[in-house]
Amino acid sequence: MSDSLTGQLLPHERVLWEGKPGTGIILRPVEAFLIPFSLLWGGFALFWNVSVWAIDGNGADLPFKLFGLPFLVAGLYITVGRFWLDMRIRGNLAYLVTDRRILICKRGRSSTSKSIDIKRLPALEFDERSDGTGTIRFGASGNWFNGGNFGIWQPTFDQTPQFIRIADVRAVYELIQKQAA
Image (cartoon, rainbow, N blue to C red; front, top):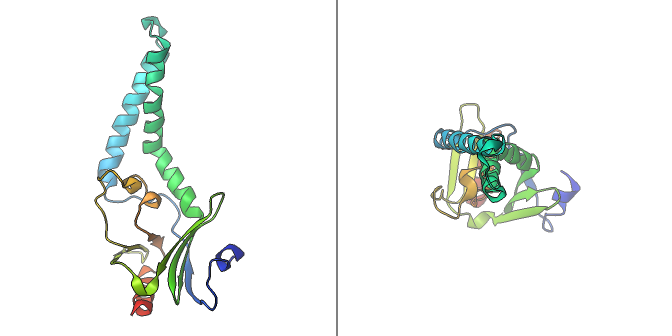
């Protein structure tokens, strides 16, 4: 365990499990909606900007040309940038189960940690894939389409604390259940 994680522990607290989220692109069921939407958005934004900037014969004013740039940037983010950012954030996450708490630690320039008392856990949601990896959510799933949850676009922005795509998720879930009892 790294020194930055050791500094998160309380006196006499024991680490029972330590892990990291899975790497690579995570595709969730909601992607069946998000990917086509992002391709349409990004495609139209690209078409708009190419039409306005490259075909300069239409005499468009500068404010009219600049109008489409934020839509192009948003299109780039929702089409490919969100996957890259999500992978980068997950690369800086570490998960701990101790005899007292659940810890989710983010390392990097803006280090943060979330701590949940293991004896006062909210509802646990457990999702296991056929390869044994999976996600444990510490709280009920919210509505992805409400205004306060940017987690629809990438799992690391979800407001509900979670262990994302960890290996041997069932064993970790059972360990947490045992400690919570």
